[in-house]
Image (tube, rainbow, N blue to C red):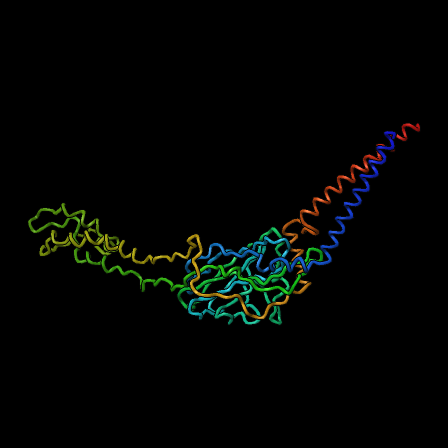
Length: 386
């Protein structure tokens, strides 16, 4: 057999092999798209696969005090993009904490601070707790389209949160738990594969204590202690009855506080021979120390309010929400998916996993080799005919 015929047969065989591999890949892809629900049912639900965590929750909140900040992270380790509503569930040990007792604000990446809303469908009475939606509600009381978020597979989203409690909030032990209502998205249609479900990720949250503000001192420090030297108007050079100047007591006059010095005469000698000068230094030496002690008493101890690193445990039961589930509207999903794609600066992956990707790569390599062989044969034939 000639070399030319051998090369031609080899090229044809390579081309045929590449077409077979490409067909096999297409068949696998069709098989995957024909039954996306079966693949989804074989895995855990999206709500269970999303990793939820709170970071930097303060160990103390002050009733009537300033808002304190922490972060809420949603991590998608699944093989699918997920759509979700983010919530925070607040509960105290007595079960008496209500939504009216605190205010929750949240901030999505690249946006400003907004105020959270009580979760529709009974968020202020579920599990003796208050469930807060980190989103807005529409005129009908349902979550708005902007409240729905998407986190693509292999990505995460961090929401900043700040919380403040009213002055009459119940004091004592309390806690906050991250919650999502989530659904996985189909890889092709990018629509939810089911109606979604609630998850608290094993009820892992953070405990804290609601305390009263430290009492402030009533009234201002009075200069009563600084007025004691006023009865000792000792002139700077007042002669004693013996006629000798008591220059040894001159420093006692200069040590008197400024408030006393303004009340003394401008150096005009007064004759008080009946008041011996040596009896007066003791009150004068004690007066300067009285002023610092009065000012130090005004400093109230500041509450810690900072996170101690590892979050405090919640020492009372917190259950998964049992309220009416919110609806996931397709139009809102499309909007949220586009926002997530823009944030990630890449299109989400569509198609099979690692096995089909490897097959596609091998098929492409064989196809290129077959085409190269045919090109070489054509050039040789043209050269022989020329």
